[in-house]
Image 1 (cartoon, rainbow, N blue to C red):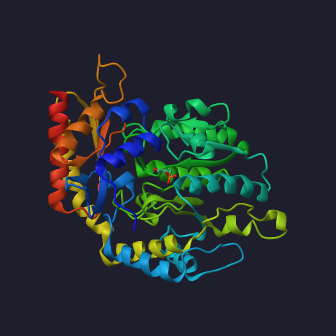
Image 2 (cartoon, protein in one colour):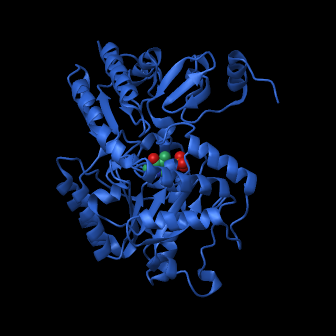
Image 3 (tube, rainbow, N blue to C red):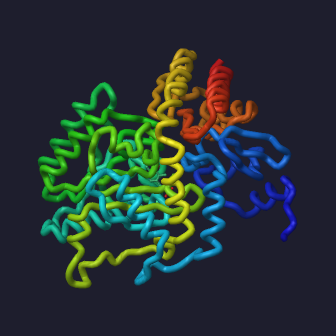
Amino acid sequence: MTRRLTRDEVVRLDRAHVWHPYTPIDAWEKADPIVVARAEGSSLYEADGTRYIDGNASWWVTALGHSHPRLVRVLREQADTLAHCALAGIAHEPSAALAEELVRRAPPGLTRVFYTDNGSTSVEVAVKVALQAQQHFGAPKKTRFVALDGAYHGDTIAPSSLGGVEVFKRPYASVLFECIRAPFPEPDAYERAFEAIRDVVRREHDTIAAVVVEPLLQGAAGMRSYDPEYLRALRDLTRAHDVLLVADEVFTGYGRTGAMWACDHAGVTPDIMCLGKVFASMLPMGATLVSDRIYDSYRGASDRALWYGHTFCGHPLGAALAREVLAIYDDEDIVGQARAKAPRITAAFERIRAIPGVARVRSLGMTGAADLTPSKGTGTSYLGQAGWRVYEEARRRGAYLRPLGDTVYVCPPLVIGDRDLDDLLGILEESVRSTLS
Ligand SMILES: *Cc1c(COP(=O)(O)O)cnc(C)c1O
């Protein structure tokens, strides 16, 4: 066994060598970081026992909490049997059984599973499949994509191109492909937003391969939700014009919105559905599900095959975990639990709405968000913004609540206990209050 490092040693090595995601370097080097030593259930712990309630389920992943004992057991057992194996020309039980279980639960009509490494690659393959399938369907001019304002679909080049958050895209603008951008269907104006996308699809459908959306809820844009009716109308529109509908359920899947899939709220089956995050919960893995119509279009000569794959496609550890995740969802009625707890989040954000300086609040399922009036006169310092001051206040009170700019939000494990959930919401409310007072 290698020697365990002290907290100070971890921080020193981190500062010397680790490049952190979404993190301005100067601010990070000045910050006193949280150094997590272990995690369990809905809690993160430092080595000295300092505890933080995990307010965003560790980047929207640990819906079942940290180190769920059933997942830990399956991971160990699978590691003893078959830990890695190529999926090219080989079949194995974990990936075959998982595919059947995913198809059984997916919106009806999604029958084929392509395994990926994470959410971004689930979207990446969706883009490539949409392009190639349109060629197979005899429509090679359908090469463009429509995506929504504020969309987030991951950070590799294709998902970034679909993305609508400008700061994430600016340095790469020269190589990103152009998308047709449609307005976000604001709750009180989704009909108008639908008319805009309807007009563009009617006019340009000859050159459009697919419309790509986060169904019902945009996570990275600040937990913004829209009416299921928009999604239903979009399904009819795309079908009528032979445009594919891609639902990126990487964030919204697995019960976050109060149904297993956000598409379920609208009773809609997309042509392509992208999964990730909660999928294997402890390992990076995702999948892209497609209809028979798309899959069957790849039959025939070898140049019609999907010449695409990732080294770790269908990897046995992730697949075994992903099966157990689904089994736990059944046995513990995780989606039902989430639905029962959601009103606590809504009620807390109604209280937060009343705090002076809070511009807007919203909640859907096991998410809630508040937009703080952007801080004035504090410059553009990363840590000086209101969202980051709330983060610091919350940390002092025992919660990890990473903001999205000046939007503060919760997205806790779906299994979080009522007491921890109330504590988390209380900490957020107090932290907002003391930041804005
Ligand atoms: C997080 C996210 C992705 C990207 O997933 P990664 O695993 O980070 O690549 C894609 N789409 C949505 C909606 C997401 O929230």
